[in-house]
Length: 208
Image (cartoon, rainbow, N blue to C red; front, side, top):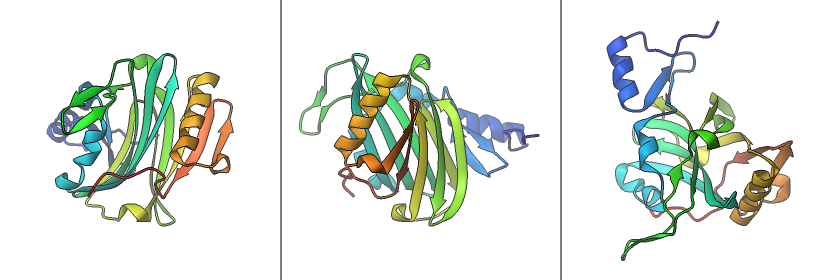
């Protein structure tokens, strides 16, 4: 029987939930709740540019593509989140025009995927060749974080599996991967599922 997803301390569990997370004692990791408050804040590239000033040193891999009349983004992150080591997969889309913040940012602002756009996702995070944890869920923001863990982003590897909604979404995401710099032999397809390894980023990284 799986261990309950709890610290065993009800007050601490409430505090963790208020922060948008839950605790998995079996793997000793924190992970994001489906309806975490962060879901209300969407995503745009400026968030990644603010990582280093907040002592978060991460590899980021945004994959942009078109599907069903919207612009989509599926992004991968791995690295050091201040005192926490971990990784993320985020799913976002928008049908709005670009936003303009004069002198700061010009580009899309994405919504976090709604319930109708959740994807089956799985990832295993490795430090060198050692598996640290595995996360699997139907989600818009699949995460795992180890409190007190430390590693440089280049020492970490994510093995990722995504199940897209249909063949058209699969085709769009595959084009996005190749536009980001992945060769066709670097990812595999089974049905509407895609598997790949995120080790060295192919896309330009935020300034540090």
